[in-house]
Every structure is written in C-alpha cells, then in structure tokens.
Length: 149
Length: 149
DNA sequence: CTGAGATAGTTATCATGATAACTATGGAGG
DNA sequence: CCTCCATAGTTATCATGATAACTATCTCAG
Image (cartoon, rainbow over the protein chains, first blue to last red):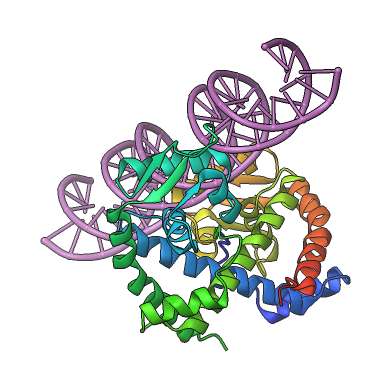
C-alpha cells in the first residue's frame, strides 16, 4: 500500500527535479498518482470483501479456481503460479478457506505430496453473491476519476 | 497489494460480462491492470528501500518532514494528516526512526500532549542517498511499460 | 533397490498493517 | 477552580504479509 495522502504539488516536484536532475518529473508524478489511486481502490475492495468474510486474497483464490477452464480443482502449487503470495500464506489461507467450508482439500492426485483444492457449493455461492458488487464497486471507482485539477 | 499474476484474458472477462451484465468490462480490465502494475512498483520500491534499512512508510515520513515548506519539524498528528496510516503504526514507526537516529522527537511545543518530529543530520543524509535511486527506479519502471500486447 | 537431490507443502518466527481501549493533557462552561 | 469532553499519543492485541528451515514424497543415476 502507498500511504501518501496529498501528492506533492507540481512546484515541489520541480524543486526536487532541480535538486536531482536525473529525475523524470512526469514519470514520478504519474507513478505517485497510480500508486495512490490503486491503493485507494484496494482499500475499498478489502472493505467490501470484509462484509462477506473475505479478503482480496481469499477472493482471488476462489475466483482463480472458479475460472480455470476445464478443471474443477487446482493444486496449491498451481494456485501459487497464478497468485503472487508466499507458500506459507497460501497454506494458511487455504486452511481457513477449508475450515470455513468455501473450498475442499484432498490428496486425490497421483503425487501424494500435492493437494487438490476445489470450490464447494458454498464457495461457489459466495462468489456469486460477491461478484456483482465487486464489479459495481470497480465500475464506480473507475468512473469517478479523482476530481483533482 | 494486489496479487493476481496473470490477469484474466479478454475472453474470460467477456464470459463474466455476460454472466454479470451490469459489469463494465473495460473498467474492470483497466482497474486490474492498474492494481497489478502499482503493486509491482510498490514491491520494487520496498525492496529498494530495504537496502537502506527503510520501508516505504519510513521513507515517506522522512520526505514529508523534509519537504514541509517553512517548518523543520512536524507533530505526529501533522504527519498523520499527510500519511494514511493508523496512529499506533505511526507511534511505532516514529519510535524506530528515532532509535535509529533518523529523526529526533521532542516535546517542545506549547501543547505538551503533542510531540515534534524533526529530521536529524543522519536522516537528511539518508534521504539524500536514497532519492536518486528512487527517482531512477520509478523512471525505469514507468518507461518500461509492461510489454503485454 | 538405494541414496541424493528436487519438489510440495508445513511450521516457526518475524514485520508491519489494523482496531479498541487506555493515559495524559488541554480547554470551556458553570 | 472543578468537571466534562476533546485531543495527542500509547498499549494491547490481532491479522496477514514475509523468509528460513523443516517433513514428506518423488525421481533418477548408479
């Protein structure tokens, strides 16, 4: 998350630009705007998901299993290929999704080291409840711009 | 942070679009790209700052005090107005910046509840060491685009 | 087969975000 | 000058990200 509330003014940026001549003022300005905007959206999404006892990560895991073409289950490793978190976080998060009944975990594959994760009916229903508001929230956010200048 | 590595393909988005007709496919697509790109930049910045025993938050606190026009010190409350983190995080982070010698904290204001935070010489030097690479990293990142299609 | 190394996932521990409830100080009405 | 409420910051605790080191299983060269 990027926590800066008020981005530096143009003058301030120019001031740093003359202090550090190699600085590309426009690139830095665009980057700060992007990071701040994305962070605000991510916060809104986290708050929205929390209403369904989900987090962004928990949601992403569910949707990644749901959207996988032709498979109904993925191994933890396959999920990790698609979601950029560390293995222990994946272990822990799958464990809570399992104990919350949103996914079911089994060892049915050939390789007994790996675990197959599939959506339960409850997981599928949760996704279905969450998705419309998710799309709506993003639509509103992206439509709103940020009003500055 | 937004952890999705491969964003959904166009077809997949269209598929969800027909399942959830109120969805604005372009807005969602743009939002996912923005969140992913910002998250990658934030990770790069965190890794860069870590080389100087800083975090993005520690850096932001330093630069906010440094850039403040006309003042050499800010209270914790004033810093919190500019940086979007909770009070306890601010307390803890200022405390470590203090014990690392990058800022100095005093009670010199009229209001004995508040604390003034100012940059030490070491804090100023650290900023000066960090800023050129910070601007360069952002310049490279923004220049590079992401190469996809 | 067997032993070495690779791979899948777990455990232990830490870092850093949050909220709730607390202390200490300040200010304003009576 | 007290009492009460507001404000500044802290403490306690939790949530969720990370890395390092571990166990269990698999693979393959000999």
